[in-house]
Image (cartoon, chains in turn brown, purple):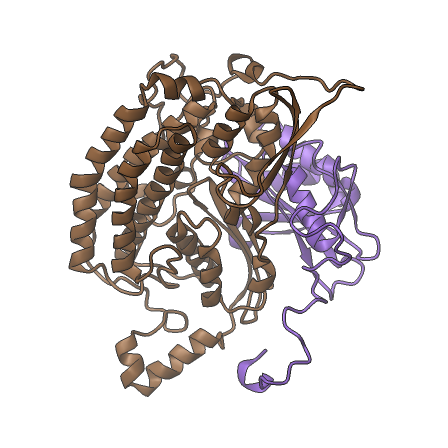
Length: 427
Length: 166
């Protein structure tokens, strides 16, 4: 496993390896600080709650001086569904369906993140094959997440065709989800202790076709459409830059942080689910502007493809679930034919088994950054407290600072490139 | 080599009786401090030359109804990226006067997370620049994540409690 500076950026400024960017070298100065003047008339503009650029429901109240944004305030919570409260009354399996609806562009990552948190609490050792299958599904989810973000960034700037090219591939990823778990968007994939079923030959064939044949071609085509497109780059380059120090202070994680030049990735720093077995690089940017975020996501898609290719080539033989009959649901065939399996199925689904007492934090690298689950169990059937560390919620508070002094069209692309998902924002 | 023991040693050496309740659930160093000392302790860990706990990972509230005199808990989790080590710091406050000093002076990301904790638990972060509700509507007059608000109507009679353990 290596971390190094990426070659994906074309105008690469030479830098020593693993160094942070000093604020003076970044383009913080681009975020103009327009002071508010008393007695001056400012106009107020509502960007949202329902605006094509918000990708969900949240509001930005912009204070404008002509075309310049002088200040903005966010109103969030329009789709708040009280997941943390609901989780306090639900057994562990029933919480998986809640995690689906956090970042609904990459549900499998949330599902497995939650399952891994419970496994950490229970001390379950998951077999290698199940971990590899999880890695494949999580990386497919990351691809579909980044693909949506980047292609929608194109749509928001008026470049529609790239979006249509890659949506075809997202459809193929959803077909793989369908083959593995039966659902497409809110997947509820996997079980505590492994997967609910092994990868079928059809699923393996579909994954192989996607990662070896169809997807690399389409993604290369997408990159040729955008990366050196003068109109597109003029819109996004040097827009919404943030320094690495400021990004750290604002709690940035994931691609948005890596665009500022910090190579922090949970998959590398705290490997989970056998990520240490794979050889991949972490693409990073150097200015933290919208173009860097776009390019970092492009690069991550290639790295995810590399991981899936390695995982599918080296898929280990063996069981796909842990021998954990207190938590792993028995196979449906046995449930319908044997009394004991039926009893276990009922006990697990109704949460009749008390979990051990414990306090556990587990983080996975979600589509937008570090997705953390902070679980306190008091020995009952449900969590005593469950807190989701939602990356979108934490980094979105930097948005006013990032779009200060810029125009509305810049504010739209910044919001789009931050990839704020309303489900994750509000929980 | 920085590990949990060296952090405990350093923190106890600096703060003595102000930090207590050390434990390591699943290897993550957890300790408690008084609410009045929280900013000092977190600032010490953030600016320490070796530890460099410069990233606030998470900030959450917890309600322990049975812990009389310290019913509400504000827990924050710091991460040192350079040493790859995490630490969790708790501060317990009584529910009648839940005041915790704000961490926004140290971390900009604490802003919304403290607003969220205030919104759901009613912990008042003194010195916070904009302490108002964030996810719930502003005219709400209670703190919904507190344990006295059950999710289901307790008077419901169409479910037999003995069968479902509710």
